Image (tube, rainbow, N blue to C red):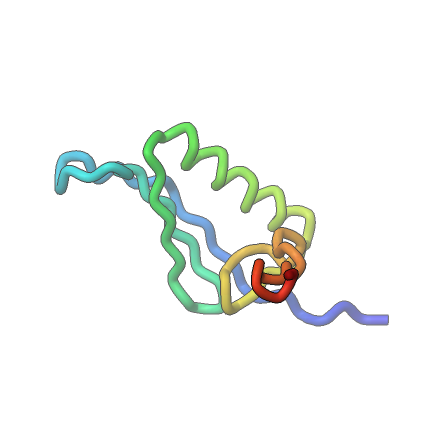
Length: 87
C-alpha cells in the first residue's frame, strides 16, 4: 500500500529583527508548507529554536502537515465545545 505524498515542507532559520524594529517578539521563525509561507514570532531565541526543532522532528518522523494551519496534523486538538454548548 502506498503512502499518499506528503506536502512539501521547508523550515528556515530563526530571524532576529531587534535591529530593524523594536517589538515584544523579536525572533521570527518562517516555514513553508505546500508553497504557503508561515510565520510565528517568539519573545526569546530559545523559544523560537525549540519550536523549530519540534517542527523539524515532525518532518523527520514523516508526519503529515495540514496545509491550512501549516502545523503537523498530530498537533491539532480535538474540537472542544464552547462554554455555551457545554451548558
